[in-house]
Length: 66
Image (cartoon, rainbow, N blue to C red; front, side, top):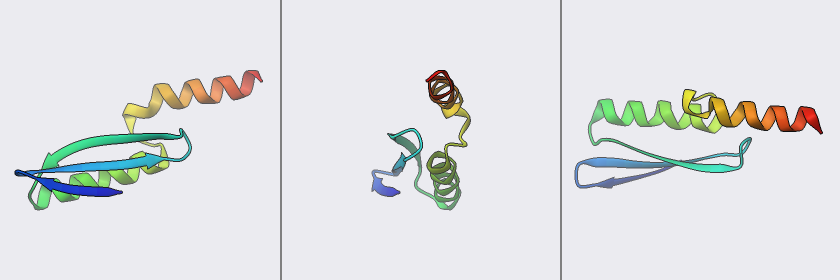
């Protein structure tokens, strides 16, 4: 996980090894934003974030068909 503070926002970058993809999101630069950023990055890393559902399903389906 990489967190870059930039003019009142936190830019967060995290890789998901399972999906072999990098993700990026922005959060407010405060305590709540830092908490949300860490939670988001943890979910992305594990492939559990709701935004990854379609990608995960496609990957599992393609492996099952092979």
